Image (cartoon, rainbow, N blue to C red):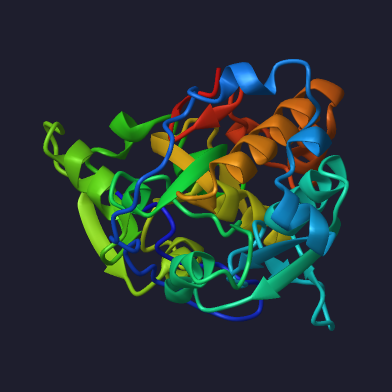
Length: 294
């Protein structure tokens, strides 16, 4: 289930739907098969020669999903969790950092075509996409309940939404979360459907709904920037987001995995997540295609 189904940007109501992952099959080494070869080596040691010669880690993203990837206000400079973590990975690899903004549905084809080395764009690690790429997972996100500041209705969890009016974005994974819960409710909730998450929040502002469900990192950013909402801590149907590497580039995949290991060990990974208030979305350990790397 794709988590990244809509975008909340303060000052503009923008919705960004994801295209499905590229389905081309290709062979590649499974996670863990090269683990022995990485023992005692640094991330910099593991950089494949073709990438080392360029001196640059070329990263692609699709801007428009704060706090993951966005432009600094008034500039065309990309910032957010993905650009900042990408820069930290490049530093561990001993490479310069270059990031390109591209259409989301072109990210995997561009990766396979050699236009960039890795993709970091809040991309769900799914079985379909793993036919074409390997993922070094770095983020775990699900839907979170948002309520009016101060939580006047005392909402604590999904069960508390039963018998109440809730607004959820059309076609989103969070609509599915609400509908699944509603099947369990003795007193059914009234579900209003909005075009996107920001529009749904207007229904909370007006009192027509008591809550919504929004992807956690988006919810945190929107609540922080507006000061009008509270985000409950529990995340529902959480799933991994990964750094995509062409499935044929297993050496680069392992170098990126090693860089993640080093960043987790020295606190660099946590520092990036803390900067954007999404430490709750951290992964535990180094994961490749949802499995422990070693």
